[in-house]
Image 1 (cartoon, helix red, strand yellow):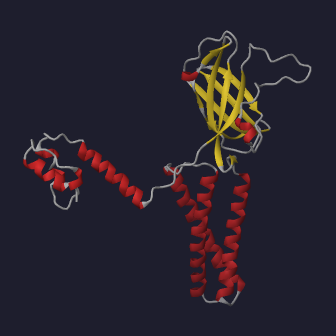
Image 2: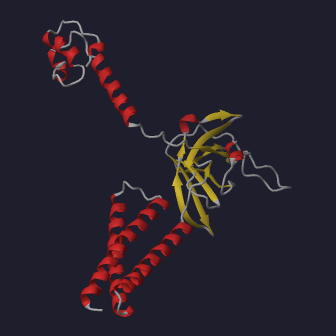
Image 3: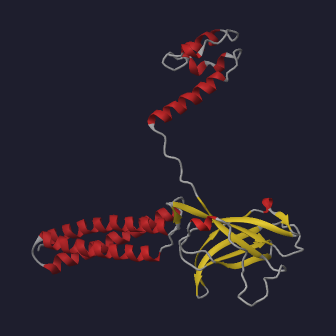
Length: 299
């Protein structure tokens, strides 16, 4: 095969690699919770796409020179290699990714109540709540949550602090750590199943639970309980008719809020004849003391 066709195959394969690498990187950012608003995420897609395109170009050129005669055969071989590599990388990323668990298709928030030791003062100060997943003391990923000190309440001489964090992973075990100021108030394993069910929407027992035969967990140490709460999906987007009706209602409300004795400048934007409500606005703009016509006159 001559060099002209070899370079054409390399270019076509490079374009395939460019788009394939970009799509794989987009999947990575979605599965690994990389913020789409981060400018670094955009540059990552561009960098990986360019690198993938260059790599695919080289693969295509080598395939064109090695496979031998036959444009379609060489292009198909090069494209298969590029798609195979992209597919293998995608499968590996998928298997290693953290996917949030769901109940009936709805993602979940993990709600907690942390019971402080007996005699603890009213909690105040800077807070930190982190939910992480780890194995062999190596942390894989983590999500920060919120300690709600403003909702803390006293119960049986012990302060209870509500908290919540997005349940970002199905991997375990889950570890919850919390602190107020420089004081750690909890560092516990949360015994939540990888795939919570409807039973987990109810409050659990208080943890840690001592082993059989051990004394009860002392009230001089923090304890916690948990449950999951569904995150309702966002409302569906408005239809064109609903969007127009909403805009019209907002415009009518703005128009109705103009005092009848307002200065002419308040009516100017409505005095063009092609603008809705102009029939009602023109008499008012002619005299700031003129009564406003009924909205029913709106064309």
